[in-house]
Amino acid sequence: MCPVRELKKIVGDVYYIPGRTNVGVIVRDDWCIVVDTGLDEDHGRKIINIIGDSGLRIKLILNTHSHADHIGGNRIILDRVKPTIMAPSVEAYFIENPILEPTFMYGAHPPEGLQGKFFMAESTPVSKTICEGVDEELSLRYVSLPGHSFNMHGVIVNDVFFIADALFPENLVKKFGIIYHFNVKEAVKTLKKLGEVSCRFYVPSHSEPSSDINRIVNVNLEAIDKVRKLIEENITSKISLEELFSNILQEFKLELSPPMYFLYSSALKSYISWLIDDRVLQSMFEDGKLYVYRVK
Ligand SMILES: [Zn+2]
Image (tube, rainbow, N blue to C red; front, top):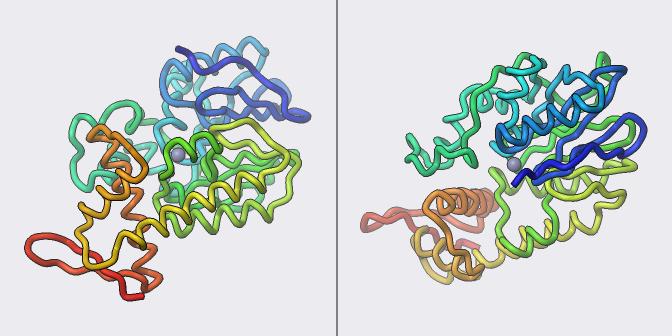
């Protein structure tokens, strides 16, 4: 089923195409900048058709980060209409070398199950890297939003803030309990930063645009806090990482395929790093297992 429906106006020349991954569309004269391209070729084809039907040309693609559901439409759009692709540094390496995505999640060359379209898009070249600040030429302001991914950036235009995956809608947070963040400590800082950036509209990648995000910021912060507390409560004495993760995943009643297990254990490892950094946990190796234990 195609997740893309139509071009919806947010304000002025700023639009979005709602879908499983929302796609931002910033219109300039007879051309536009597309913010992210969805999961796959099908999504990319729909973007081409919707924008083409509007009489616009896709001149630029801005990828907020390198996750497959944000860059999967790049290839077909590049082949058909030859836009320039822009992305933050580091994310650009992953977009150009997509095997890196499942590789870092698995920690070695990934098994086949981790090389499907949900973890690995087709490679596309990134011609311009972006960093935090104002892009005078395009009248855009890029905002660094690290945490969910290595170097995710959002973009502000005409008081509309495309915030990518800095936060997730309440239904997904409640459904999964554990939301993937590469660096959960940084993700918390980014969520707090979002509350301080005043804009007329905020457009998350996976929910409707909103003019007030404070409540959903808190929902995301509370979910992170809940996972952290649950990990702490589950460490009454030394426990192996495998047993700890098993306890946490069972607590959230998560039934996972092997590829999804790698995603979730990567997310949980980020909490372990955070707790070690905060001097709450330490790790040790014994009897062929890696254990963690409380020091605070
Ligand atoms: Zn993402």
